[in-house]
Length: 446
Image (cartoon, rainbow, N blue to C red):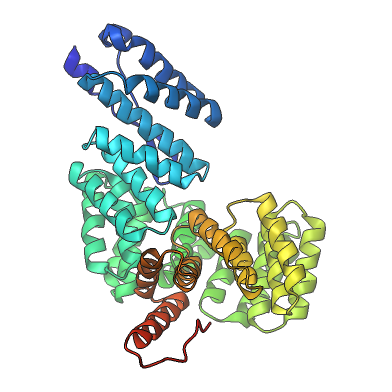
């Protein structure tokens, strides 16, 4: 009975990269002295199922307070699960420091709680603590070599840092644990793309297509994965196959225009976006893609007109306000841009690009504290957003707020091939010159 009781770690998905845990035991197997505490804990699980996150968090906290008084091994197991769940809910609410605290408690109480180590890694990563996050993911994998979430999270972090060979090893392990794991397949395709290896990409693409039943709609999902990871060659081939099987499929035509934009073929992208928008005038996302293409083409006033139409027609869409802000900022209208960005985050508090741009505007106004807050929120909203990580790292160093964390962020971003990566490498080079006394006139150059 008691051994069965300890096998309570059945996983239940909560959000994205994290999981909660729950006991799966009959009431008669629970020790008498823990029945009340387990009842409180299970109430939290039911509240989670109903998406009542506030009450669920309070239930878990209450269970933690009571279980902390119990010395038994069983109590500690449930305590660790409750702490993991509290941390996961706090992650969902973007309360990162408090989430980290509960997740640290979970792994201290139960050093074999791989899910808690994985969630701790996510909490650390969203705070810009890249090195600590990597250690947490590594510990999750050490505890459970088949922990797919942690394997994928660790691999994606390594890809961001340019450690492609090691990332590939973790992804292979992830696929051994779950051969139908599409996230691992997409990440592995990204590794091959960055490595310039073509043939394995084709095999992965075929495997993904097979997993998705080979329908045009399923292939379109794969295209979205590839575009998100800038894996262009398989994306283009898939789009052409979709349009051959289903000529005139508007969603595929839209993806083709997005692909052209990624490839820098902006005139072709503009033509494609306008064609799709004519067929789907209510599609705000296509309109915003058109605005972005026009901005890249240098036709800012024309982009502003299209963006203004977007917010007038769809005022409750955060992305429309973000694009309007981008146009205003490009025209040097910083105050108007800030108003639009703030409107975007009023609608969607996790809009990473709007938060990042508000941080940039605050920096221009010499409002360092406000800028730091925006950059932190942007990284919390999207832990892999290179621009926000660079801006946060730079700000932490320049303001002398947290030099070590700033350098870690800049080093991690500098390992990527992004534009932000190039800026980070240049900034670190400037710092090294200062340390060597070779650039005494440097004073926080932008």
